[in-house]
Length: 199
Ligand SMILES: Nc1nc2c(c(=O)[nH]1)N[C@H]1C(S)=C(S)[C@@H](COP(=O)(O)O)O[C@H]1N2
Ligand SMILES: [Mo]
Image (cartoon, rainbow, N blue to C red):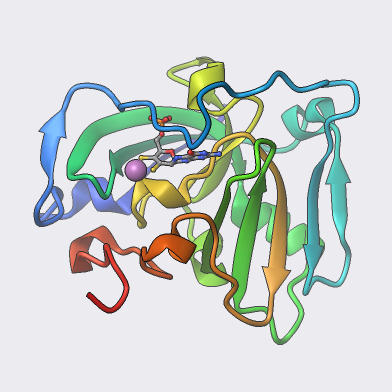
């Protein structure tokens, strides 16, 4: 039986973060008009940087790793939230354990196939309910929601849940990603309304 995880945030009494409202389904957001198609025969997912053992997996290899089903709410900084999205994939803490974090590992920069990046403290990828998802509601991740692989971090705003992921770079120091460079918060905790940085 596959392990089923219900995000701890679903059980909070303040489940809906301040300044958010519930909507029915996630709105698709992309920094490009058209996301290109990837050559899956050469696709590789990588973990590198401040790790003892860099990782590299083909899509098929990723699918064969120990996986979990995750139920989590999804909170976009533009003030909409969606209840109980069902994902399936590999826990990021499992991958980071395989890679072995070095002493100084503090941040990650997540790299996406169309050039998007997202930055966050590495500890958020060690949470039980953070996964690299390849299924959504029981089906292969639709392209618009991030095929082949997307990060899901239920404790942070959805701009950190990077789509079309090909790599996780583990860093000693903070390197801002796409939205962080444009004023968004290095962390982005929805319950603390960490939307913008310094304003
Ligand atoms: N690669 C990539 N990931 C991304 C984005 C993006 O533009 N490119 N947008 C982010 C934002 S702002 C949000 S709210 C969510 C939206 O997820 P969805 O498009 O699956 O609804 O994806 C996040 N991940
Ligand atoms: Mo967003």
